[in-house]
Image 1 (spheres, rainbow, N blue to C red):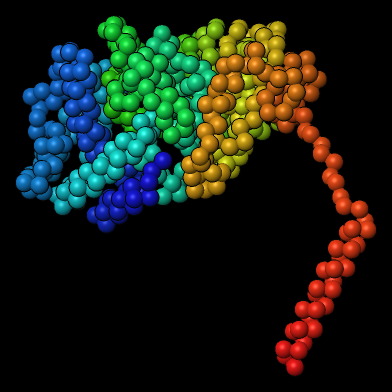
Image 2: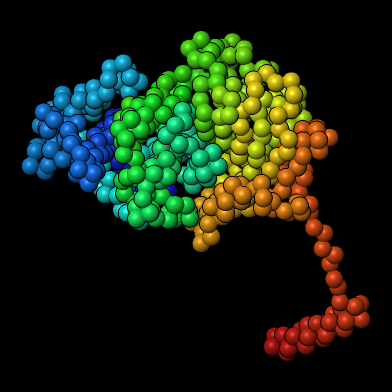
Length: 518
């Protein structure tokens, strides 16, 4: 999460853009993202050089022959603002548009990107502001926020300040919930991983960093602020085969989003985290166009937090999603189920209404989910998990693909778990608390086959027959046993004596007050 100091610096940068004529919010976000990308690209190149040196490998800088495109070069105070503008607009910006294979998504979606800053003073001020912001980002990372998708956080904060975050249910997933979901589905380098509504790419980055942590030596592992294990600096030092790195860098991570600005930012974000050839496409995963370009059963891992309560145009909507209506949260569940190959695993955040809603589309969705998949778990999240953007109660569904268009129930029983808090205060401030309940939940899930109690208190199993009897209701509270504790009261005589004593005290106070005022 961004510090108050960092938020203040972002606000000042936004004010500079506004005062110099760049008033369209999306334009401002894009330009800030490009500058942040240039700044971080220089730093990432230095990090890759250090990693290569650490592993005694050869290193070729991405800036080879283009040293004047480095942020550390053109941001020098000795270079006057007009020269900086000329370098950035004519060299550095064209350079970042072409640093990837022209056939790959990054180059395709950056090809029509435009650098809108034409004022030398504004660029000079923006460069200084980005350096200050980046220094704060580095400070936060040194304090233990390695998993934080900082560029995504900056983007989200800009949106929230312009009152557009959370519109149509679209907002970023907190990093700690992504970490939990990675623990639940446990992605590996052999997986083909996808997010069909990827935004800035947080789930894909989380999966990548989860894999690097798995393949880091014990001396490289630490515990982060949420109680999860993570690598300290580089990660993946136990991966020695070039083939594995090639797969992780170019073939393991896929995303889709209908917003081109999101796609550009997501692509830049993945590249800065080490995924050199990211695969994110600008397409609506619920559309007929998606059906024309992509097949079912493509992925072994899907993680997503699809838009809540959204509606889509029925004319362009896929006709292969097996349910009627235009509710995005239901349609995305159907799309994710179809995306998975047999044995593939998914972790998806959905509004809790999907679990118990009585409409035909909601019931049909739950039936398909239970038949085509083994629904492993329903993890109830606290209602403040997505504040300040929404107080909607949500849950995480974890399921494994069994068979497409199944006529039989592949779910035998479902594991339910309640998270009463996620390690943060459940108000708009979302302050970090001392406790770390998410690793506890992840461990309970992994040990569920042998360590789940019979009593239905915090976590328990429910057989499919009971779920069928309850109209396929999948809500946690439907099956939890609520303990009734009979209240105890003092004997009436004691209560009466206490009341009489209190009455006498009131009378004495009244007499004293009467004497004071004469």
